[in-house]
Length: 166
Image (cartoon, rainbow, N blue to C red; front, side, top):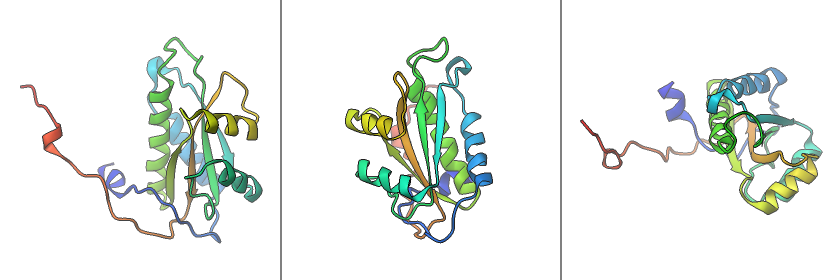
């Protein structure tokens, strides 16, 4: 697992002519749904977009989503009212999102996590575009495709940020 974590990058350029398959998307969604959640509340739903016209619409409403060359996008939708642990949906949806990113790496795909929540103008725009009713909240959009770049690693271990209590 550490190899996938070390290999993960935010990919912003994809090969336009190489689409992601439904099987690959389902594997990423399975990984997402295996994420931990508070009291197993699983406060998430997912919208998968492969239609170019809709990907272009995402491009219009999210200023930082690298969607121009992506062949798919996954929108993680938070269900804040789900389960006995109301209020933990940001952590739960974050865990699901990270699992998608790591599964993408395992399959040789690239992905980029682009925040939607808590920016009100973005949550409203995504809710409108995808007919997401309240109280559901568009949490993030993940662009997906075959990488057409190899960014350098940015993360690293910093022991100075760790407090050991022995």
